[in-house]
Length: 370
Image 1 (cartoon, rainbow, N blue to C red):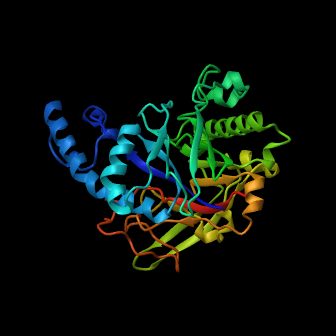
Image 2 (image 1 turned 90 degrees about the vertical axis):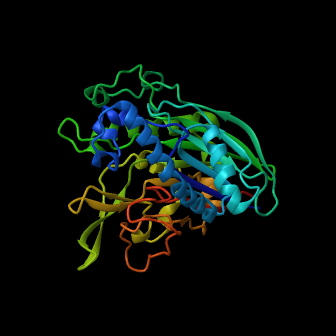
Image 3 (image 1 turned 30 degrees about the vertical axis):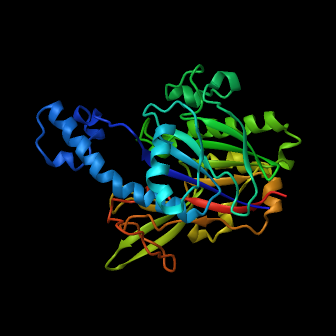
């Protein structure tokens, strides 16, 4: 009995407008920054026009990327609400794959922008096995104090013990696939942000992601028991906003790009994979071919890295010892440099920087549950 599972950060699947860019230049789109806009009313009109014009191509590409995963169940990040998800599925995905993801679930997490994790499922797998929703549990309310995860390091960055751990949520979803139980943990960890306290954005936010990872591990161990979690069917899926390795990019399109693998000394992933608690199955791919995101702040700071994960329980990983995930990169913009031999044909209308399916790439894997 085979199940196709995927995860994808769809990048701001919103059904509302954000007008904060009129007062905060950090939120202002670069297109509008070209023009002398003098009143907020004028800004609102132009921002609405910009977003609507931009969204159609973007969401066609997003839908193509999802369709390419061939997933029976897909975990999503950066979804505004279930109404946005319904409108996207009906208006875009349905035109490509027909009656597909009729079951949709999300929760209201802690993100200040209102972007949440979500789940879309078919009613049965491609092989005809029924997919049944059992229950859904949000853990957005859990605090550092409640889980005993507040540290002096967190305090030094101004985080109080009473604060909630998860920047979005750890959404626990129980399913049955062909009668076999499966539990998914949908996450979207703290983004790297800006430099603080003399540290770069990644290191400055590392304590938060480590706390989130520890909280996820505790939730799973409390659910199944420390001695029994390894034997159960579960997976952690989502955008961890962290990596254990990256491909540092030098050169250019004229002289040729060079990609140097660099390993990190610390990552929140280590909390979850330590002691064989679970397996990052993307690491079954070659070292140069694990990336799901292209990061750049200009020619002096460029790398490819894995931010998107499907972590399998030991039981699932062992049962699927030869399963190698696919990474759908056809929705990447043309500015993304690909290591030799990894080039793909881009989806129609992908741009140099935008439109694109997302800044992330979907990850998908086929799993046998029994």
